Image (cartoon, rainbow, N blue to C red; front, side, top):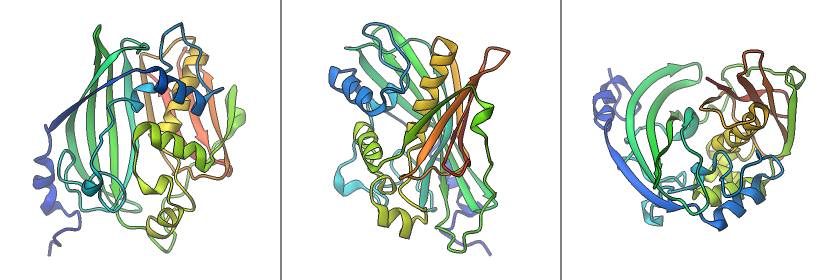
Length: 287
């Protein structure tokens, strides 16, 4: 018998009816957002030319701004409007790909257009999963600046017995450059504020541990990807045309994590974030 409301196959056609939905927003690359971004990430930023924005600033522009009474219990906008009403409670930014065509500049008027590309339910070792793929197109007055694929994953409620896939281990010694960063609650708060991200597991520790089942506050996926993209830019000497990243294990706060990267013999970048226990939390590369 198929159970209703549990993410079963019977709901797939309804959820997939969200494919093709769009929304758009506009913003400015202001001196304030540039200063906030630098204050949050420096000194772990790639050097830029005069007036150019650092890599990954686009995640701070034209964010979704739902009113307080439209939020779900996790602090995100309630499901069923732009994103489908996935009946799985835990959401995480799972990965994606960024194609940079033109660097953003101070003073740019930016337009972000988003489209739901795909919705897919799968079975994983930790239970049912639902992947939602969103395409982003960012333009300025000069034309196309960034194309991006964002992968969102929804998961079942926390498994209290601790079962789950074994984490992948890494060794910082395999990489030529390592940035060590303390994942303080202040770092997470600042990034949430810049991106208008209300997800409670980034700032509400009792919610993160008791409701979503994590060991501590959760470090944002795009925060890690921002650091990896800036490290790739440093090592390659330019912003990569295509940058892919994928989260493997949640990175939690109140520990020192490492952003590791190397330039491979073929000229490409390979990088990871490692937590204090040497678990690979995110893997990234250039194409």
